Length: 223
Image (cartoon, rainbow, N blue to C red; front, side, top):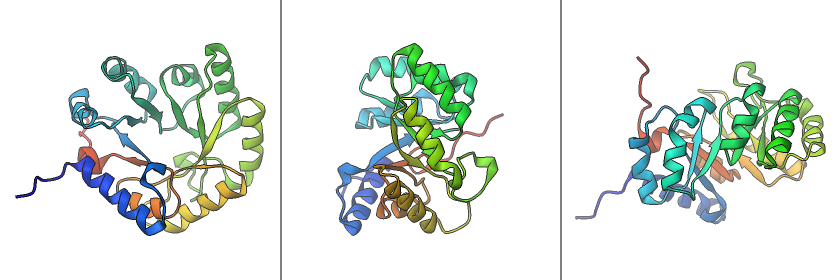
């Protein structure tokens, strides 16, 4: 009997299949394991399998569990994928290796100040509001050129663009739109795709996919 694959191996295999369809190399796609709301004991098995990129939504939660994990696994790269309050910018710059939610001029200023203070330049993805949904955050498409210019002027490394398509709507057109926006602005990175649609995202150019449920199962319910 063949040994059953782990969830991580399943996701990696699906990424490889999608890359083959799109004539891309799997090495060009970074899998971010979204560990928000999962305790350290749920993260350890993926670390033992070799997973090194992890995503968290909240600075405070990451501060509580990742310092010890990173001490044991120094090669870990930590990504902030949730909305960031300006008053948490310095904490985010200190802890994270990439920020996927730069979406407004005030946050550009806060991050630039924090990066200068810490003498640490953290790559940032500009989150774009592709679905015109204010509640998710994201820079309006019309304001994207100005925000990119402001970020570059502030010496913030712009890694690419990020989006969260509207739920319960086919995601492909939104991924294709983000891919076009990235190309139009000369950006290499496309942070797009989650557990339900990462294969589509890879076929449409994603360089970073943010996968949680497919790796960890359902998130714990807060009591």
